[in-house]
Image 1 (tube, protein in one colour):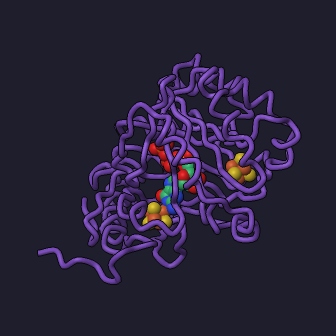
Image 2: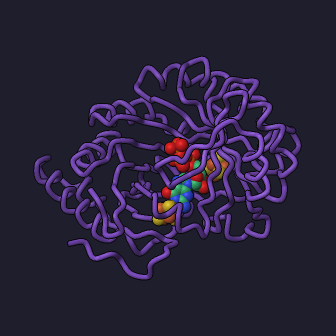
Length: 315
Ligand SMILES: Nc1nc2c(ncn2[C@@H]2O[C@H](COP(=O)(O)OP(=O)(O)OP(=O)(O)O)[C@@H](O)[C@H]2O)c(=O)[nH]1
Ligand code: SF4
Ligand code: SF4
């Protein structure tokens, strides 16, 4: 279904927990803060996904915090799978992935994005607060061998790790991951107080332009993708102050505390469905109320950074 700005709703991004075993200095916390609340159950998450299918949701992204810290992660994946979505992916710090990759694949997870912001142990620890580089590397290898493909790596660029970009590209090529995402920092969550470390990706992108064999544009966020001679795809993610990025936004978020949140940056454009999910209403009535919630989501969604100051009139 299309919103007032002509953008389809296709992707549901679910925050499974606010808890994380890392403490990255720029964590955007999915725009939700760290407040603890009782998490939604696999069945409740499954129901939101199932009703979302009627409105065009065909992919689900699991995030956190760190989603692998949810003990019932396998059940969450199974419940979403039952909603018959085309693709389930998960963004993770990779620390626990070596022991989980095969089980997650078997449960129905299609692919992963693993964050890795430095190839040197000291730098890795400076950024994440954890001495975990080796385990993350093992996690990436496990994802590749379990076939959680395309396996993607996420690298957030800051002033602290500009010297790591080339090393990350070489590592990604050597380990057999399919894509590397180079991402600009957001002034959201801890990113607000650490935004002085923000770096634009422009000069790196110029080099990619010169060295790549092919350039593609992805429909999602209109992200440019540079295909290197090795076959590695480097996707450039410039989500900050970028109206083109927001024009291609196709997602809604489900927060830990059960709100449908229409934008990473916006706390005002949300629809609270927690009461519906936790009520003792019959299932058909919950479905009906969730349908109303999705209708409101589509009516209030808007790009955060935009070219136009008002929506188009759709006739
Ligand atoms: N502003 C904004 N930034 C986003 C959004 N989605 C992703 N990003 C940025 O991209 C980073 C990586 O996101 P991921 O969850 O790993 O992956 P993804 O963007 O969903 O992309 P795929 O897995 O390739 O589909 C996030 O940390 C954000 O910085 C979004 O909807 N809005
Ligand atoms: S691993 Fe992700 S969720 Fe955890 S602190 Fe780092 S950025 Fe935040
Ligand atoms: S509207 Fe823009 S800032 Fe908001 S979630 Fe979508 S891409 Fe991100």
